[in-house]
Each structure stands twice: as C-alpha cells, then as structure tokens.
Length: 254
Ligand SMILES: NC(=O)c1ccc[n+]([C@@H]2O[C@H](COP(=O)([O-])OP(=O)(O)OC[C@H]3O[C@@H](n4cnc5c(N)ncnc54)[C@H](O)[C@@H]3O)[C@@H](O)[C@H]2O)c1
Image (cartoon, rainbow, N blue to C red; front, side):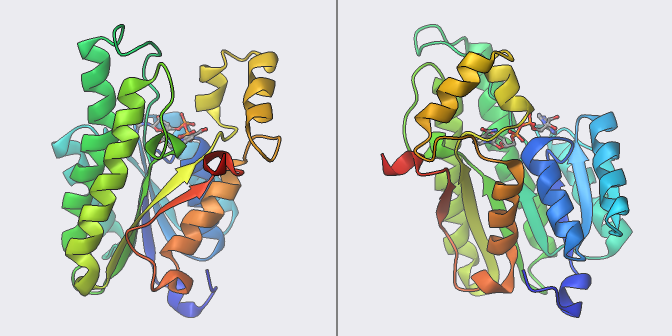
C-alpha cells in the first residue's frame, strides 16, 4: 500500500477483527493511515484490537456484530457509514472451523452453522457493503483458505464453505468489474492464530506436524496474510480482481 494522503482518507471494515488474521489486518490498515471499523462477536477482543489501532495513531471503532445475522450485518455497515461517512475497503474474514469429523459423522447442525457463519455471511456482508462502494469504487477481500482450493479430510463443512467463498468471490468480481470495485479472495495456509491453537488442542506435537506439512517448514504469521490483504486492497493491485490468492508457504504447490 502506498502511504499517500489519499490512503489517509480511506475507510476499511474488518470482520473477525477481534483476533488472529483480522486483528493483524486491522493493525496493518491502521499503520497505513486507513480508518478501521472492527466487527466481531467478541467484545473484549474487538476493543483490544481498537486499542492497538489507537496505539498506532490510527482511527478505529468496534462494532459488535454477528456476521451470520442479516440485521446485524446491516447495522455493522450503517454504523461504519455513520462514523466515517464512507466505505472503501472490506475484509470479510470472520470464520469458524466447526467440528471435525467425516462426511458421515458431520451433523446437520454443524453443517448449517459452518455454512452460515463462513459462507452466507460473506454474501450478506457484500450485499450491504457494495451499495456504499458504487459511487467512489472499492476493494473487497473475502477470507477463504487453502481448504477452498484443495480438499482436507474430516472437515467437510469447512472445506465446502471455503470453496463456496471462492466461487462467490469470482461471481461478484464479474458483476462489479465495470463498477471500479475489485473482489478477491485470500487463501491462508496454516497460520499461527487461536483457530490453530484450537485445532491442535494446544498440543505442540500437533502444531509441529502442521509446520512440517508446510513446504516452508513453519506456520505462517497473521501479519503475513495481512500484508497480502493490504496489497489486494491497494492501488498497486488495481488490475487484480476475481483471484483466490494463496498465502500458504507453498501448500497448494504440492
Ligand atoms: N488460522 C489459519 O490457519 C487459517 C487458515 C485458512 C483460513 N483461515 C481463515 O481466516 C479467518 C480468520 O481466522 P483466524 O485464524 O484469525 O481465527 P480466529 O479464531 O483467531 O479469529 C476468527 C474471528 O472471527 C470471529 N467470529 C467467529 N464467528 C463470528 C460471527 N458469527 N460473527 C462475527 N465474528 C465472528 C471470532 O470471534 C474471532 O475473533 C477465518 O475465516 C478462517 O477460516 C484461517
């Protein structure tokens, strides 16, 4: 991102901003002078992110949001507009891993929850964000995963939701290509965040197994995904739309 005075007028919305990749991205936007609306279910974590944004000298507000609720997403966008008067960038990032288990073991409740929180939410967010970008243009990044590009055993709902995000991103990018709104997806590999702590049950041996499975031999940092999101949202990526960018230490090259 070029740190021009232009960037200083911009406003970004980050869902799932209370933790992990979302928090790192909120900080990365703030460090470039972009005002941030941090949306999350987690009030304490969201307020902590805003405090980090302020520490960087940035502008930030927290909006308690459930991205699976249409009413809540509508309120999230309206509050952002009420506070800053515009919306230039959206990182639709909130997500959950759900329960692990085979296609046979996956419960209907788990399927519905993961598909709603991970995939329906991205559609709801874009539906409410896009109208505010039609006038001045914008950039949207949806958080998919390497699980949106290749299969993984025992996470059928998660894998389906992330493949769906990439399809939805491509569809939206085509609809908006002539409206100066770029829509891309980012596909993180295994990134050191609370989600991975949960997936490995805090077991160092399991985490080491994930690191060894990464071609680069280590887990990614949340800031490494944040840097890719910032680039996708910047004028430096002005001819980039409809892509699903792996930030994965080489995982999908295998
Ligand atoms: N960590 C990884 O290895 C990895 C890999 C690929 C993709 N991802 C994706 O990156 C995104 C961020 O994950 P993370 O690793 O930072 O995990 P995380 O658990 O640290 O952060 C996820 C955030 O989303 C919020 N959230 C969950 N449900 C929500 C809801 N209904 N409404 C609003 N907020 C909600 C949580 O409160 C949390 O703050 C997710 O979409 C995840 O699927 C993560």
